[in-house]
Length: 230
Image 1: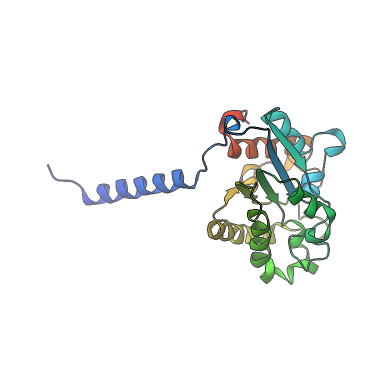
Image 2 (image 1 turned 90 degrees about the vertical axis):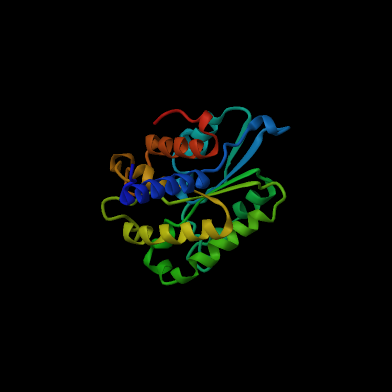
């Protein structure tokens, strides 16, 4: 019986794609392997801070999903850029040092949205270098065994404050390259929310339900067993 070469090639490609996909999926974090609650540092901008006044920010909701074997702390600061020479660099706020002093076991970074503003975009050529430096700053901590960097969420309705979707899309490719080079994992918040404009009150910031989708997506990346279905 002869084997169809085209079918054979297709089968090989499908198999290789599956292997690559499995290799890119980080193993779940097991709380039982830790002697104390797992410390999670959430680094971000206003998208990380929004809804925190009602305890419904995505870090708040992530804590509720993961439970008492985890300690999730919000180190987000509104308006901050990943760029060191942006108009409001995250590097220069106390939260930057506080996130390191927390000695996190897990670091989740969701920055880049404010970098799409015109006054910051002129320095986009520094975005990759500065992102690598931020990741490296946490890698130097003996406690940080898991680092995740997030695709920023989509921008709807033309954006606001100069924030725009066209530049966010350009950032995604850079973030993927940084993750691959640094050996860290990517959480695709952008893809998880691309078809849900109703979850963003002003086209940029999520409403509580939107923060909930982010929390569930991140929980699924950390430990699939702890994440409820969307």
